View 1 (cartoon, rainbow, N blue to C red):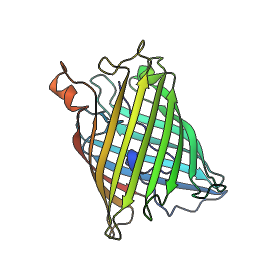
View 2: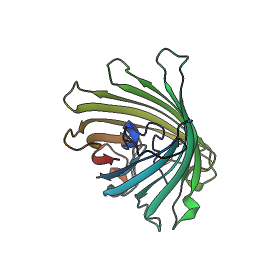
View 3: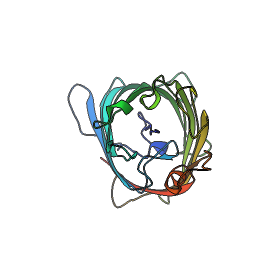
View 4: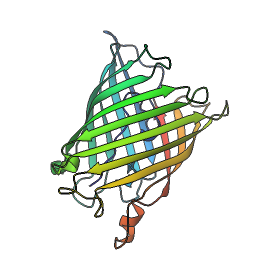
Length: 252
């Protein structure tokens, strides 16, 4: 069973979630941000979580001026069993590394993938990310991430994921480009990806920010994996092969 990880501190690019720059004023250095999204196919590391059907997603995060944050993110899912809702709590800490010339954003934390009606699938993942701004082009960003768990998909299997994502604006047009590639490996004695212990996923697409509606963005991307699909049913094959995914996100 495969799952999706969202980028937390920046919550941009590969995750499909984008948090607003302006946040409600709260006491004690706290702020709240969030997103709501509609997507034609919920993909996690290239693999569908909804049998290629649409998903409704939403998330909220409570952040402190110190860099600490906690939040929850949810979506509908369909793995063919009793799990139909994913509700993921997470905690983390993000800080700018001012001693470096580019001043990258360091983000570390814990993400818990939870399925209330099928708790055997629940699992916890540790993540670490570095985001670099103005890479090659003004306004562009480069995300590098490493994720680890010892209980992948609730199967007591060690798993590593590394991924890199890049987003770039196309001048002042409102359009932009996104691209990413990831590699996931798992303990093959306890879990396999269609007979293999690892696979590669990718994403490439275009985005558009609506000037007339603050925080509203659209994305059309090709997302897929290199998983072998020989012998799989058509529905399973479509879930890992490259396909077009459209997502509309509203940040608030």
